Image (cartoon, rainbow, N blue to C red; front, side, top):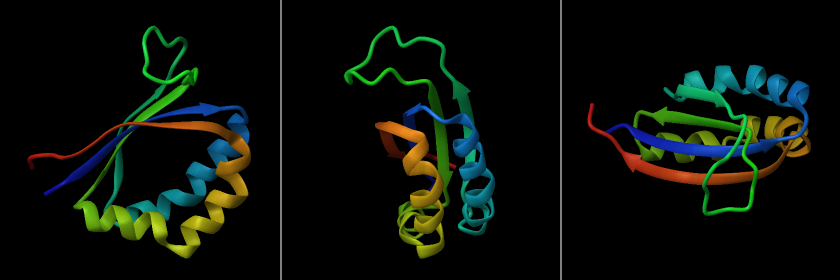
Length: 101
């Protein structure tokens, strides 16, 4: 069953974050994953976190095991460390769920 995550981020370096996305995308596709939605957020009206999210997305994997393999892949972790970590100051996991096909 497909597995989705809805995530909010506080991105402080758009250039590094864009490079992160470019480099991780082939790995995401190899894992069967995709971005269903991707937003740049101007203002947060209500949230359970103090993070002033400026980016939000829904990412989907074929199943939860595929998601776990992707996020633990050493190639992904290297890209994340080099590009994502300096570019993003906060991540808010809004939802995780299995979805019908």
